[in-house]
Picture (cartoon, rainbow, N blue to C red):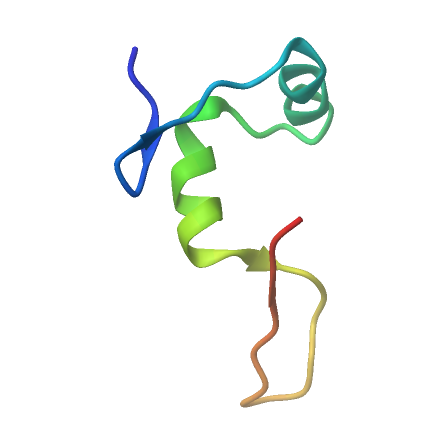
Length: 53
């Protein structure tokens, strides 16, 4: 399979794949997370916080 984000290939290391496995995320979800971020923690209504690492 070919995984890309913004036209660039995603080439994960074995360590990265292990970390994704630990948090129950598969490689298919990575492009969306990279583009949109992920919820860091719950905030008050109408406050949005997104994170990337």
